Image (cartoon, rainbow, N blue to C red; front, side, top):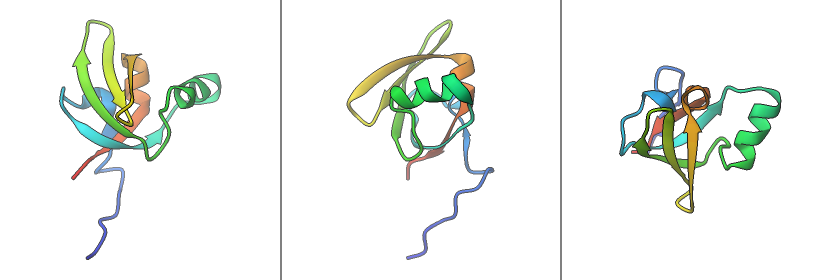
Amino acid sequence: MRIPEITETTARPLGHCPVGTRGVLHAVRAAGTRRRRLAELGFVPGAAVEVIGRGASGLVIGVNDDARVAIDRAGAEELWVVDRA
């Protein structure tokens, strides 16, 4: 079986994903303190994520099936995911 290559065209910002989307975090496009804070919350490449809900100021995300995190829209745009097959 051939494993598909992940490219920039298959990855998309988490902020563009509808509620119910499950995926794998491909890249974190934040820098410095913000990148470190996202990593502390579990947002590291390879983490399983699911969009659980949307609010006026951001998203509620499930991370690795054991945490729920609220993140603002800017943060959601810095997290790039690939849909889980």
